[in-house]
Image (cartoon, rainbow, N blue to C red; front, side, top):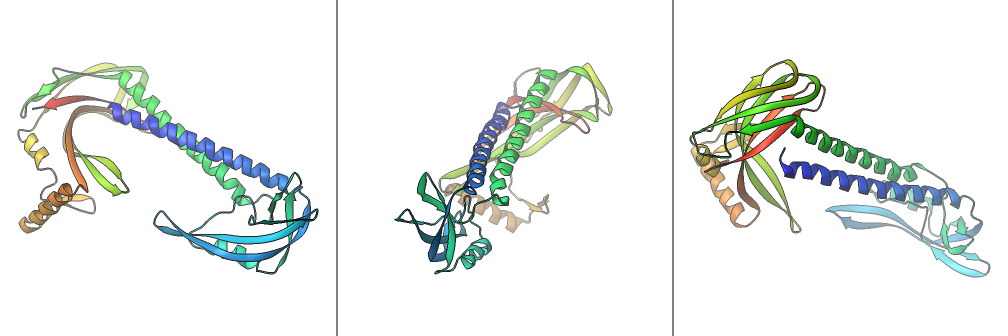
Amino acid sequence: MRLERKTGYFIAFLFLTVFGIVLAGFGIVLFQQTASAEKWPTTDGIIFHSTVDSYREHDSTMHKPLVQYKYTVNGVNYSSNRVRFGVISTSDGGYANEVVNRYPVGKTVKVYYNPDNPSEALLEPGITWIEYLPILFGLIFILIGIVFLFFVIKQGRGVKQLEIVLDKSVYSPGEKIQGKVFLKLKKPVQGRSLKATFVGEKVVSKYEGRGRRSEQRCPFIKEESLLDGDAEYYEKSYVFELKIPEDVLNKAEHWGEGVGYIMGKPVQLGERTAAMQMAAKRFLENVGVVGFGQNNWYVEVVLDIPHGINLQNEVEIKIQ
């Protein structure tokens, strides 16, 4: 298992879990505020402004209700624009229009105000589905984060229980990779297959705007060897041999040239189309939209476990 993939799982676990806890915590506070507002004293107020506020956010137009009202508590005049705790913005504008239509200018309304801070007020106390959303989504993010942690633990377990030993770490095109796989499982496991694969992949970076770039790892060659089939796996060693193609470096240099995809399947392009594709590729690379980075070479061994998480391990190699 390459370190960056395991690290990526762990970072995803941390981000999703922390974000989920913060979101759920916000939801709990919102829930408590909304419930306590039902017990606040009330006074009469009047709507003096009611409209839909539209604004741009992440390349889409969002809409939220903007309702302002004034009221008096103990001879002091106040104004507020809070309809309820947790008013949401939507892209279709339906919810915002519904709220604005409910509170037209000039309408007399019942205002709930905080007796300890009369400037804090709202029109609609009580718990609705809106208050449950942050808690629900927070729990979902936490659950997804736990799933990523589970992957980290399982992948770590796979590294310990599936060991790969190669005859060397540096190879030349056309050479054979000779190695051994040692299974050290804690208990017998029914597996569908055990495979060793030589993999070559290209690291492609893409500019996504606003200074952001993303990386994608694109395998361009796979040489596979089946070590065992449907069987019970426990403690055993396997010998394997993988042939590195003679033209592997040439394939890496000219990766993606003359090949297109139709419904996800590679097809060979015609000469003119391939030339146009190459020109577009060079242009995108020159202006920094796409970057074709290093080649990664590694041997991967996977124990395919039906109805479970596969055990796998990888060992990086060099080809020169």
